[in-house]
Length: 488
Ligand SMILES: Nc1ncnc2c1ncn2[C@@H]1O[C@H](COP(=O)(O)OP(=O)(O)OP(=O)(O)O)[C@@H](O)[C@H]1O
Ligand SMILES: [Mg+2]
Image (cartoon, rainbow, N blue to C red; front, side, top):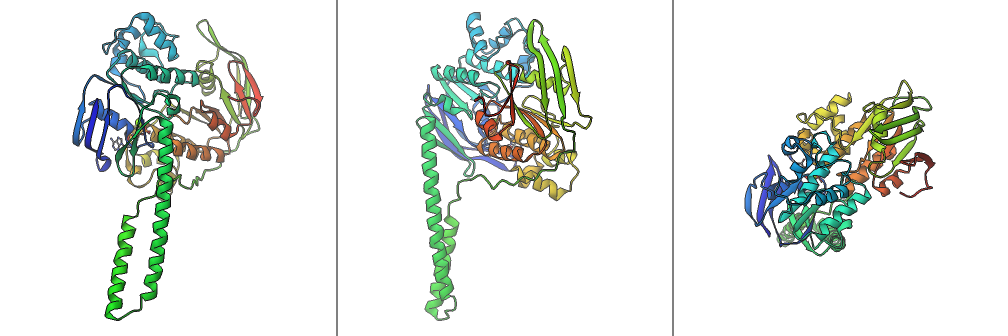
């Protein structure tokens, strides 16, 4: 049972919650939703006792475990000698075979329980933290975007597991439709009001109610606006009146107009008109990059065998395949982060690659947004600010330190940074992770405007379709096909 009354919290001057209240009863399956930066991760940290509320009453009964949005430097994980030790470190009592089953569901069965968690990649560590969350069987499990580092199969597995679980689970996710039939409540963080709204029922019921509410609000606001315009016309008509009665009427009308304008509810946030301005990428030859006969094995496991791959100037290619099919290995070979066992890479001498991966951040966490952008492109302060504004960072936000940005805000910034430099090939490994609908739209539109070549990996089929790549490269089939021939 979780009971929150009149919760207030702010980071410095920026309020996140103002007098927010909600209740979660035992055993519920709750979806926590809200736009990027609305405070989902913050709420989880408050519930888990990692940070203290400024004001309000919070009552929680039972053991709470929080699996954070991303796990990079977790001391417990770094210090654990084996995966088994880490998985049991929160009071888990599972047998080895049960642990292995959970590991397999999360696509971690390449590791055995004796292995040390240290050498795992960021995505694998995040999934291992989910495994520990499930294994510890807390009374209340808080999962912050658990499906980010998973393909469709893995996502389904997590959601099914959560659905069957007897305890209380609160999940933040952009894939809540996967959990639709199991969710019995949705908590929505209203970023405008800084409040938390409660909706009983499953996720689609929430979406329906929200759409109805917004339609009603838009109707109300436009009706009120019409009334105000009519009153203003009336006011202009009598504006020359000088008689005592006339002056009094004028004043009354003016007050009424002002009062109505003040009370006018703010419109639901719509996707801002998206206008991104991108520089031309630096000039490059016809074929920026070509790979021939690339082979790569990890131990006995052959990941890439005789891969031939090429990309033309300005072409978009989608890399398609399940987790473990070798997409990231191929990308890392192109980037020179992993060495191929054999084969050749021929690249244009003017090739400049911009790389985004959710696991690979090059931010200096202590710098502000504006300092970070300034480092990458040589433009004046005003232009820097308007460029950030186009990517939805406005006002004082530009002076925030990069390290304290929310997951979605970091992704949005990372991609904005790639687009404003003059790279002629972008490699994007899961660019939509963490992004809410509006940011996804924004990034998609910006990527569509980009004129250089692009290699993109995404587990969001709609995103790939909209990006409309000329060709798709299928792994592990090792086949290049023209788009439109295969649905992913
Ligand atoms: N230390 C801090 N100083 C200033 N602002 C902060 C700090 N930490 C977080 N914020 C801001 O508070 C807001 C809420 O952050 P939070 O991480 O809770 O959002 P979220 O809903 O989890 O977003 P996402 O969907 O992107 O993960 C964000 O706008 C973030 O930039
Ligand atoms: Mg978050």
